[in-house]
Amino acid sequence: MTHSHAMDGFLSEYFADLKGRADDDEGIYWEFYGSAVCESGEDPAAYDILANPPGPGQEEDEVHREVFEFEFSDRPLLPCYNIQVSLSQVSVNWLLLSDVLKRLRMSSRAFRAAFAHLEVATIAEAEFYKQASLSQLFSCPDELAAFLPDSKELLDLVETSSELAALLGSSLECLDSRWEPRVARAKAKARS
Image (tube, rainbow, N blue to C red; front, side, top):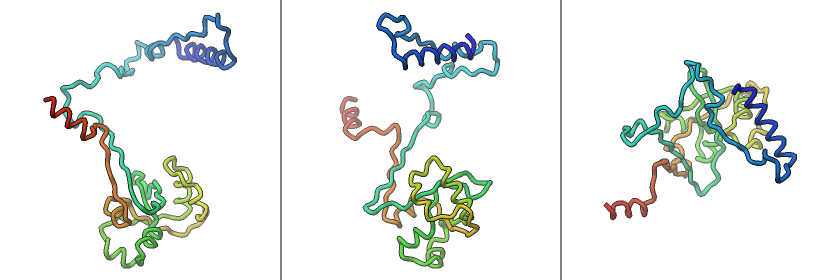
């Protein structure tokens, strides 16, 4: 079965479902096949994702783990922006230094002297606006109303970290995808 034949079949059945079918229509029940029907068995570059599933004997560091990070605070969190400040770095989360200084009631000079080890970067306002407005991670478009998309002014950013969060009155909590509630762990220990 070719890709176009499979897609044609899918679309025609999909649109027939949208229009509604009679109860005696044979197409009311769909037949599902694995993704292998869309793959060529002759293609040496094809990769079988089910060929080597993870097993119980794998080492801890080989198993995929997801870590969810939560930030808790009794005050509104400062807007966070996922920005790539240079071509040699990946996008990371930044706060505007001006927001941080307002919250801490500090001058830029005092902050830089006291926290020289915290990463501070400078970016043109136009580039900041462009990246923030295109970011899928940014959920507060109203915050961008204060910025000019064509401005050459420079903005100072400070990289987020657990230390900075603590300075701002927040706490960071990480939840591992393998985490089990204490009750479940206690029951497991009692059974063993």
